[in-house]
Length: 107
Image 1: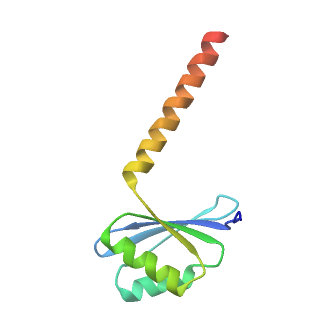
Image 2: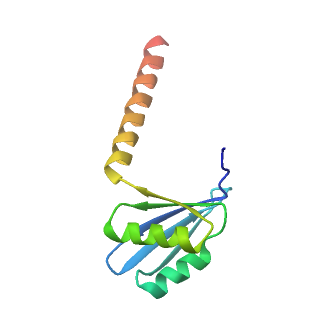
């Protein structure tokens, strides 16, 4: 079953603070930040909605927050490995470069 997400939510976690970006269907970006303590996390959970897809970079706190998001909200959450994302982006850019070079050579 395919899900249609209404917003993408990216969370960058530090030891004491988190930076959050909400990206809606129109690609409008809203920035928000809070402390990573329990009060700040509860404020985050209050902002999450059903239909949100939340991405968090891997760290020990990410697993705690992901678990709490699953328990306390109707949002979907994934914990992301930055190295894998970086590798996939680089591969995508290499493929694009090769296609552009091939198209230029054919012209």
